[in-house]
Image (cartoon, rainbow, N blue to C red):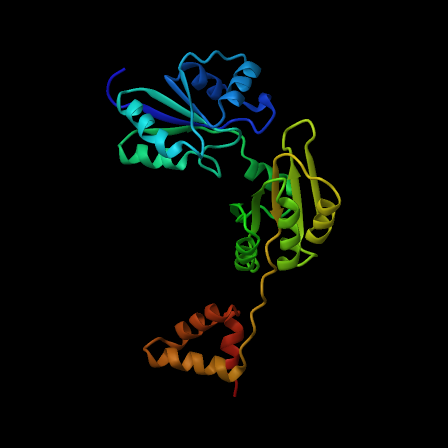
Length: 280
């Protein structure tokens, strides 16, 4: 091939090979270069899908991505079709990939994706918690002090939180979550999604922390935690509302616009502010 190549990010099954897309199969079979987080897992996936990988297979993981990225960009600029696949889910989402994507973009290489399963959205959908607005935090810091500091910063986040955690750290993480967010905060622990022993525990954080401490959690774990309850706004007194309207009128706003702005600022109905301002 000559000219600019193309980078394709492949969404891999989380565990069940049947979730693989037709595009994933096609890309694995036709790529010039397949960059894989774990080449052994890639070989197993190819066998499960009955796909023969004709292209060159190279490893691309956290330990070698800084060195391997320029090599893959060279392949791309030489016109090769390069695909990137991780152990499960989408590359660059808490997996290797961001560095290569950034380098390819800087080199003017076209990038696309063959979308596939995502542990983030799968766990969110199964959790039974609000999913209209959520925040993905990836893995929490490994050190206890840094983890607790990060959780304190997230304690007032009102969106549903989605976290990844390693099995050997999940007990400590759940204890810190219960201590920081409150033992009664609703949550779900999703383990081994799409696999034979899939398990979703929907319990308050305190109960999940006790469950983890009494057992030996294993497998791929995704935590979903309900957001903090919205803090009700404190209604200012009538004098404060009248003063706020008067201040805005002094800047040139009409009374109608001043009332509208004050109502919006304090989260009140315009009618209520109007009544206060026009009280005799």
